[in-house]
Amino acid sequence: MMPDRPALERRVLSAIDASPRRIPVLLGGCGSGRSSLLLRLREAIGRTSAQYIDLERVSTTPERLLRAIREYSPFPAPPLTPGAGARQAFDATLAFFDGAHAPGGEPATFLLDEALELRTFESFPGLRSVLRDLVAALAASPNRFVLTARYVARAHRLLRDAPPQFEVIHVPALAPQEVATALPSSAAGASSDRDETALAIHALSDGRPLYVRALSDATAAIGLRGIADPVSALSAIIGPGGRLADSCRYSYELRLHRARGYGALKAILEVLAEEEPLTLTEIAHRLRRTPGSTKDYLSWLEDVDLVASRQKRYSYTDPLLRLWVRLHCRPAPPSEDDVAREVHHFALTRLPQARPADTPPQPEPAMAMAGVPDHGLIEID
Image (tube, rainbow, N blue to C red; front, top):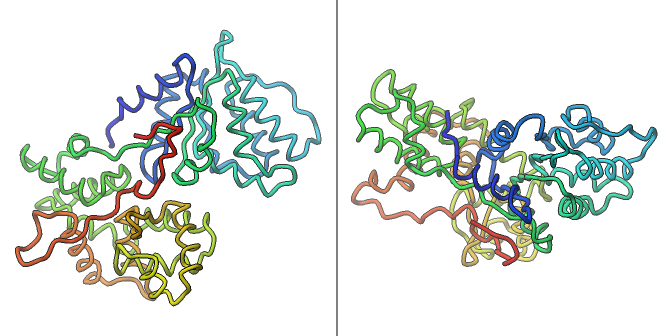
């Protein structure tokens, strides 16, 4: 069980209750807790006053999206116009967002999870500017909205010229104290052991809630049989069929399929899995491609937040995903020895106190937000 984020929840509620109201946009990678936060907000606001919509699940066609939103909405909806096309259905969805009201005539609240998924509608006739139309409609509406997105770079680009109501909030990683609070009792014994285990799990997981949960549960399971060891737990769940391996595979495939140049992008990720950070020239040399084409590939990877650039050197944004690529992007599944060796090396780079005296320091992994520009028009935490 992951801890609630009351400070973050209060910040979002304060934004949508402010005068003039603001529209929070929660940004974070896979497993960062965005959806969980929206579902808690729905309970805090009340199910008759707030509607949660997972746009990643229902953005199939504009007509079916409109039908799904209306069918599961707590808010009354006007009759549908029969035979409406894609443009008319999308306009009707925006009109519903604008005109819905909660009991007593109070403003309705829409919690739009993965709002950028509406981009898929831009292949329909007359819908070339779906996301810009959405931003303009929400800014002009009297109702309240909270949006989320896993694609940070794309969200920044969309909101660069957005109306001032939009407030970007980066969902923070869990702090070591939050990890310690969430640890199962079998993950550590005494208070000092608990704090040490929490620090190790925090370092190995990069503080990402989904990874923290998986690693905490695995550490607790090992603790029931002996000494709780987060490094051994990581080996158990990052190998073939492991819980964390499946999570990383989902994030890897999802982001690659949202980008362009699928095969070449996988090759670059394998290059960076072997060594990082690397410059554009170094990557192009290893890839045996021109710097121009390599720069395009890297920009597409940055677009879906798989890599980031700091001082013209490229690295993964997610260190555990890099570990997964090293283990699983090979012709055959890794052996137990392969997993143990790679996890041991990864732990040495993440846990300085575990580094032998003769091991040289390793470069720190890139920050998750490295290379994402602050355009000065939106608030960034």
